[in-house]
Image 1 (cartoon, helix red, strand yellow):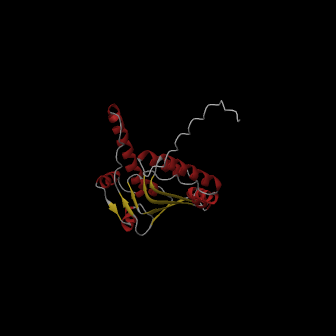
Image 2 (cartoon, helix red, strand yellow):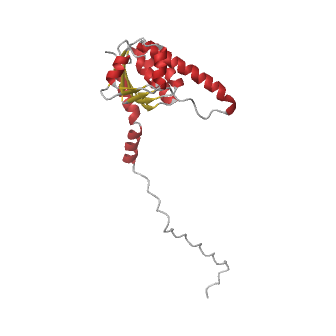
Image 3 (cartoon, rainbow, N blue to C red):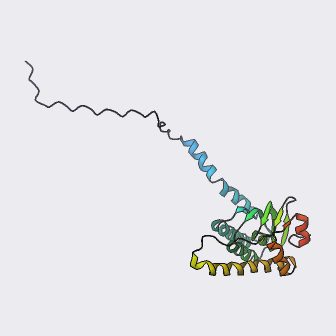
Length: 213
């Protein structure tokens, strides 16, 4: 006779969860070659910027934040230290607040190498100063210069509003003075045109003194 086992029976296995018809199946991991391709695409803008810098070209476009402005300032300093050949600054529809605009203007003022600035698209407000201070100033045939006072900063706490308003007014006055100096026009005329938000075509901007003849 076979001996009777004294071991207790094993507990039943828990039921396996069934996939929900409402949830998608997990996506399988991408194979190696696709991952490499994605990495190249992510770094494409850096690769393009490096190629442009090698040709002594700095291209700025759209809304400039502090990181982009600081990178442009560092690039201009690097190009200035690396040779005396002209640096090409391309401005494509650039928008920038007053603080960053003045930081870029100061960087351009410190350049020993000549800076040739070309405006593309529409430049407005403080961004016009980046064009006005160039050693050589040009624009694409369809460019538009929008003379307009920059907007004051938003999100300022109540007890800081008065101080911020006073500082903003002072900076706007500095902007008018710098543009008047660049164009050879009276400050009062620049102030009136900026407040009126005057639009200038390329030919009008050239006659105004913002572009070279």
